[in-house]
Image (tube, rainbow, N blue to C red; front, side, top):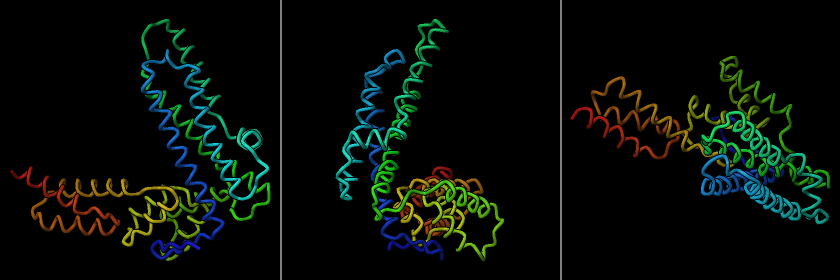
Length: 289
């Protein structure tokens, strides 16, 4: 059992949920790596939309197949040895895979646009490559859903099933009511616990809790990291906003301002407070030089 204390809301994940989370995080990482490889490969070899061809579709499909192979390895690790690459892809993965269709749609649309304009002007390829990289990410990440389907169908009970649509809707409704102030703070802990346990995989929930309720113990950050989200950059953005507001209001006592920065950093659980104290010191010195 893995437990987190989110400002009094106790969040518990049993071994089954932990196993699911491990699979999900692994394939999120594989998807990130694959989409980045695809983006880099395209940016290094494509200078305009006329160069987008089957070569890049084939490369994307190759990357997806490598992630599917990792899916087979995962299934075999649960002692399901009757599913090979071909069966896993055809029976469990294909319904989730959309990269090839979307790639062809983009290529067709580009071709139609160029023909209509009858122009030699090249379109900026970077946004198109970014879009294709997102499509590839989605295919690679969805392999974890195919794994769950295969495990459940073959009687594996060591892994919890993925979050269903009903739970997601319930979590969303609770969160919307909580952040809109329709739920009493007296019931806050129970509601936060229900929001997270119904659907732990909504980043916005953790960002809201950090900003509104604070993260003195860094348990929100730890929980988010366990679930595959890194809140360090978000906390840094909150620090930037806080410093800007201090400067905009006017700083007459720099030491008092630095103490406020320290307290706010402690409140949201930002461990890099020295960086932001140095920053406000530098801004104050520059503006009063």
